Image 1 (cartoon, rainbow over the protein chains, first blue to last red):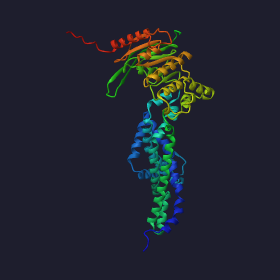
Image 2: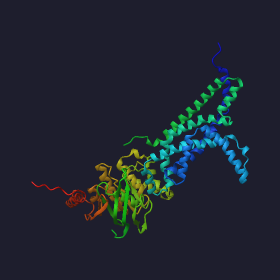
Image 3: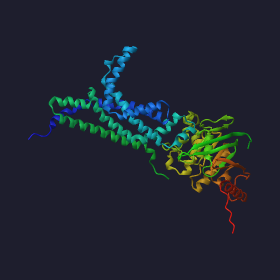
Image 4: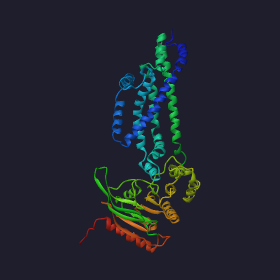
Length: 238
Length: 261
C-alpha cells in the first residue's frame, strides 16, 4: 500500500521553501515598520481631534477595515502604476513605472491595511493611560511631545503589546496573498513546487508547518517582551 | 513674611458640563490674591470648586472669564514654576523614585548640572535607601513625598497641592504635614493647599480661604495668627477649629427647621 503522503519528497522540498522565508519576513518587517508610523500618526490625529486630518484618518480607517485585503492589494498593484503613468504623461514626473518591483505594491497595501488596525490598538492603549500622567508630565516642565514619548508611550506599549502581537501574526499569515501579484514568497514557492510533480498536498503540509513554527516563535517573543516591559511591576509591595 | 503679591486671581468664572449634560457653575467671580511666601489653604466641601481653582492656577485648565496672573504675567499653560502635587497616584509607575524625581530636570535638559539635587531631595524627604524602588513598592505617604520632591526639584515659586494628604492614614498625614512645613520654612516657597480637613488647614496655614458650592465662590478669608510650631490640642487651636466648623455649617447647610412644641 502506498503511503498517503510522500515523506521523502516533503523533506527534500524543505530547503527550497526555507529559501523564500526571508521574503515573507521582509514583507512582514518592512510593512510593520511603516504601519506603526501610519498607525501612530492616525491615532494621535484622532485623539487630539485635529480638524480635517481627523476626518481623513477616520475615512481611511473605515475603508481599510471595510474592504478585503486582496482587493486592496489589487488596487495598489493596478492603481499606483496608472496614477504614476498619468503623472508621467501630464506632469512630466520622470518615473519608470515598469521598473517598480511588485513587492513595493505589497509593502504599500500591507502598510496601509495593518496601519489601520494598529491605529485602533494604539488609540485605545494611549487612552487607557490615566489623564493625570500627562498632566503630571506637563506640570514638571515636559512638552506635550516629551510627555507622550517619555510617559505615555512606554505605558501604552505595555497595554498594546498583546494585541500588537496578534497583528504581527495575522500579517505573517496574510503575506501568503502576495503571490497573487507574483511576489514569490512561501505560498508562491509552494505553488511552483507543487506544480512540478503534482504533489500539492505534501507541499502545503510543509508550508503550513513552517508558518506555524514562525508564528509560535513570534508568539513566544511577544510574551517575553511583555514580561520585560512589565518588569517594573515586579517586586514586593510594602 | 513679605507683603508682596505673587498670584492674582481676578474675576474668574469657570463652568463645565457634567456627565448628565447639566451645566455646573464650578467657579463664579473668584477674586483672590496670594502673597509671596505665604502658606494659603483653600478649604470647602466637595463640589465647591477648590480643585478647579487650583487647576486653573496650575494652567491645566483655562478660566472662561477673568484672568490669573503670576508675578504680573498671565497664566496660560502648565509650567514648572508652579509645581502641582496631585491627590494621589501621579508618579510615573515604571520609573524608580530617583528617576521620577529627576524627570523634570531631564525634560528641561538641565539634569547633568543638577544631578546632585536628586540625591539631596531623596535625603530631604527621608527616602534614603528607596532611590531604586518603584512607586508601587513604597507606601502612599512615601509616594506623596516623592511627588512633592519631584515638583520641588524644579525650584517652583509656588507649590500647588491638591489634597495631597487626602488618601493617607492619620500617621502618614501628620508626618507629611510636618515635612511640608519643614520644606516651606526652609526655602520659603509659596504654598497653596486645597483640603477638606479643617485641622490640617489650621495646623499649616497663614490664611484660610473658605469656599462654598453651587456656585463655587469664596465666602470668607480667615487669618490664622497662631504661633508656630502649632499644637493641635491648644485651646486657641480648638477655638479656631470650632469657629471654622461653625462657619461651614452656616455657609453650607439649609436653615435649621424650627420646632414648636
